[in-house]
Image: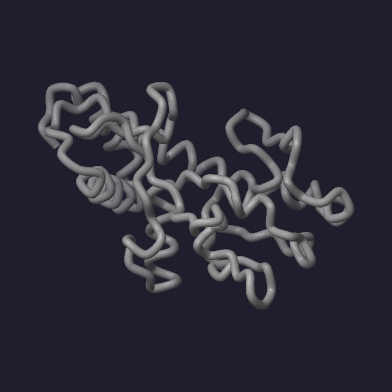
Length: 196
């Protein structure tokens, strides 16, 4: 993923790092691989609303993966002691990379009320951020939503969030193969009848 080259977060009190961050399977894999951290150290399972695109079905209801937060609601990766910077800067979740932009619509938009201090927003290189970086973030989110949709329509026994995570990792591996994307699109209409 292309990362923006900017220092707009230096000196920021990290207010955005106190918001709940939904994670995609891509985010989880990136942190596991690049930071060599086991899932249980940074991933929590939270309740999701019925229409939440991150929400996957389990026997216990609709859930989603989120970053663990400390007792004071700070992100587990916020380095509050030294720098107020992210400890996983080079592998942080797509939603954090894109912030203060929202990547849910066709064209990324600036958050209506970003947690960034107004002075820091002056240093935001909107041209650079709205290009390749946000396109990568948007692609990951769309792929994740597609995986969630495939999981939710299958008739597979949905035991545990770990089952969904393993399913997601298999789908990501498949996506990276030469014909994986085509295979997933062809297979999708048959998912309700398959036991994956």
